[in-house]
Image 1 (cartoon, rainbow, N blue to C red):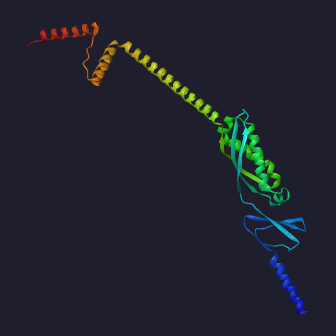
Image 2 (cartoon, rainbow, N blue to C red):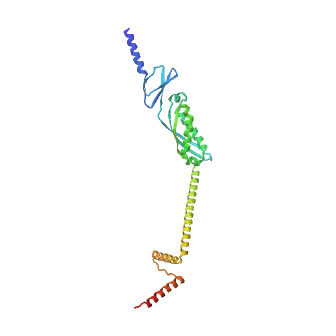
Image 3 (cartoon, helix red, strand yellow):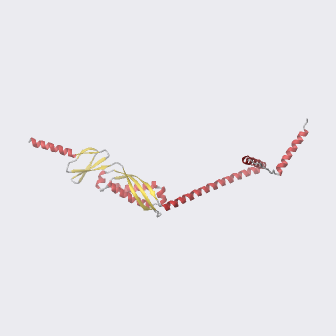
Length: 259
């Protein structure tokens, strides 16, 4: 009787030890009993019935996966090669095990198909300039498709977009033409502004003709100083007559003054 009890105790200890399992904080264990879903365990220490229950461990951390480069055609018939990155996490471990055989591979395949569809619905300019919005559209589409599997897609980004060399040259020429156009517009605006200022200056000078002569003398002085040359100035007759009249008036004043 004692031997039987001892054997039973030893067997119970062995069964207890064999059934002990540990799940980390970022893991969950989906338990099956005789082929049927029994429940979810973890994190921490738990126990299953050996030979009757078995488990499948699921990692619930965020997973970063790179989508292989895909060659597709944009809405305006331009072939492009696009590489994307997807971030997702399993929010329902039970469905990720029961509803799909390989959840990681399924998510990548959905991302590949969605990437082609999204690129095909947009032009090349949208693909190059509005990648953030396209990434948001892809995230929403992938998340909608993977939600029944207990997967939550948090972020999708297009990492690299390659276009044909001929298209690159055409885009470079277009960019150069736009830069030249902007330069001409800026130059035209500067000339217009300068013309308006000259018009205002001409109006001020017309109000006082003597100011024109003073400005002319100033310009001649500046040119002579910069070029280190001798400048012969042709004075207008009105200016000479005015200067002679001033000199005669000054002489008469000197003669009439008492000595």
